[in-house]
Image (cartoon, rainbow, N blue to C red; front, side, top):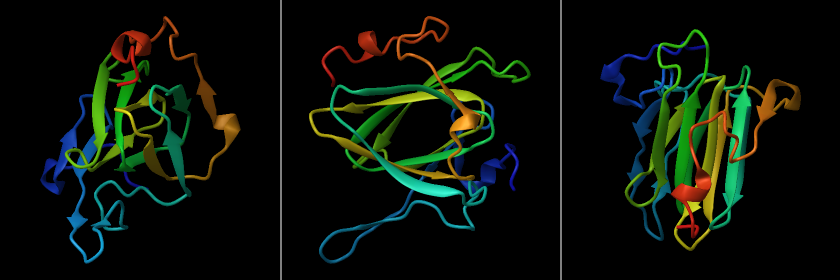
Length: 168
């Protein structure tokens, strides 16, 4: 399994939270519609395969907050646009207390977001159409290793209501 330390020469963009990175993804033109690459074993973000799933997000809906004890998330949005918020409250983290927003989706932000274990995350669809998020997690889903908080939990300095009052 790969570590959180990833060399910059691999084309990764640090998000500002220790262990979280973005990687621009390839869109390959093809007759009838493009091929959207997401994750390969030779990717600098590949950390093993546990489970791949899709989650649809309706406009205005907020799916937040969640944190995994062991699981690393790898998010891409092949359809629609998403705002993803990350919050680091890990005691030993050099970026403890850091909050970041990342945009995912086409056409301008087709990229892979790596979220390390123990970082809080949530997301909402931008615009008027549903968004589709694909997650390639490094271990199979285990409800015992994740916890949730209310989207407006005061312990996380972020307001979905203020950031997304009309769902756009």
